[in-house]
Length: 156
Image 1 (tube, one colour):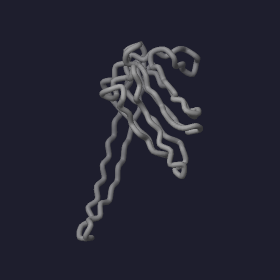
Image 2 (cartoon, helix red, strand yellow):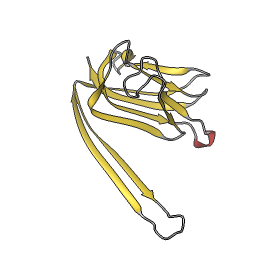
Image 3 (cartoon, helix red, strand yellow):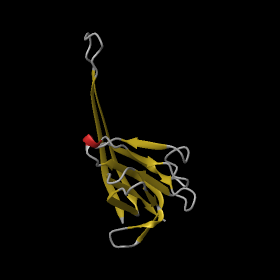
Image 4 (cartoon, rainbow, N blue to C red):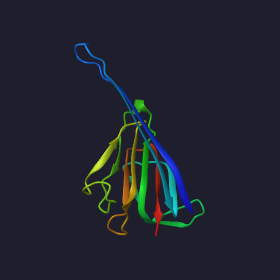
């Protein structure tokens, strides 16, 4: 099985000076088309429970659409979206796991994702997954926070 996909990121910004003299604008667009042999995609739309984190073990606890166990060798894309309503002002946290994948420098590091915002990592060379020592992504929120998680990578 192979995966071919594209990822497009568009950022538009308008900066007003404090004195109203200048209004520079900037458009940045990055297009990436990637192709991976033996790629697999994991997707979940879930909700956090009271006082608990959701832990995703990328080396053996996930299953694909056919019910087969997924053991990632490396991860090429991680996309997380906090689906909480903006009015709730409830941030969610991605990361902070003892056996974290080397997405962050240390196990205590994490990314705070505000409501209706997303966090995406795209790595064409692949982030290595090592069973038992570097294989976990944790999601932290309060009771009832909804989110989506997409992981694309290669199986062992």
